Amino acid sequence: MATRILTGYRPTGKLHLGHLHGNLMRMMELQEEAECFFFIADWHALTTDYQDPSRLRTFTEEMVLDWLAAGIDPDKATIYRQSDLPEVAEFQLYLSMITPLGWLERVPSFKEQQEQLRGREIATHGFLGYPVLQAADILIVRAEGVPVGEDQLPHLELTREIVRRFNHLYGETFAEPQSLLSTAPRIPGTDGRKMSKSYGNQISLSDPPEEIRRKVLSMITDPARRTRRDPGDPGKCSVFELHRLYTGDRVEEIAEKCRTAGWGCVECKEVLAGRISDSLRAFRERRKELEARPGTAWEVLESGLRKVRPIAGEVLGEVRRRMGMD
Ligand code: SF4
Image (cartoon, rainbow, N blue to C red; front, side):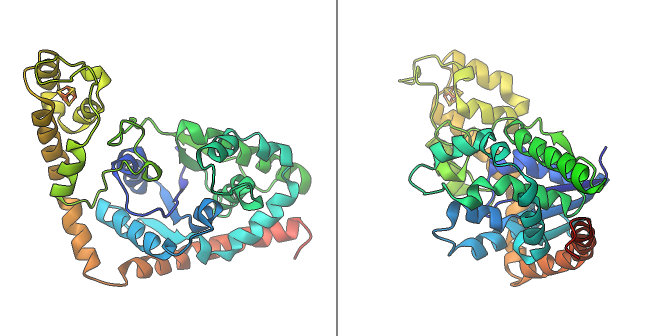
């Protein structure tokens, strides 16, 4: 098990169920067993949202409050904002000198994201180079492990290639970080696609119960159930995917009622909405308490910065020496 872990989140607004099951629960486990660095990746957010940075600050604050309300403990994990650490930017510059263009162009997500974000004008130097920025994020704290989903493995492999090239050119300096592959379930959004803010299909952790209910009731179900009397197939319904996580004790009964048209989709969704809402009650209460203390998020980021800065300074100092820049 790696002992120093790093993970970052783009500040894109309030966290949702996809984040909770995707990475947040893992972060809470990791903070108990390893030295953790959790950062707000605001420079990464700029690579795709540079045209409208007006809400970055608010999103940063909201994300820190969500982390804290979910149970991330600033006494156990070091929490900081990427742009407060200019050492990362200088380091990225050095790494960009040694990273061949072809390595970046072949990262699968480069082409995929360009397709998905068509119309956003992201054919930029910054967007192409963001895997180098990720490498700088990881190596500036000498992280040994990085929690990733399968789709992010090529990015981490690129960091490992950069490490090998750096060590080859300037002498053994960095260890190759290892991936901590996530086994998190896929969380469907209200439209059945993967839950994501960019699709606008998310259930946020801080949504009040009536909002959760409204969203769950709007969820796409098995299209074969056109009327209350039509039997359904839970395997084709995204509501059922969420039942598996939130109503595990009744999952057989729910599947049976669906297959036999024993109840309607509205009743089925009401049960799910209630369970999701109950599971987030403690989160909502903690979030309210934190909101009542303005400045909390910024204090946490400041204190995290004080902890990470000496490490980043030491690493950058060594990089400068190795590259003749001291
Ligand atoms: S009864 Fe429930 S599981 Fe079955 S199709 Fe309707 S919402 Fe989905």
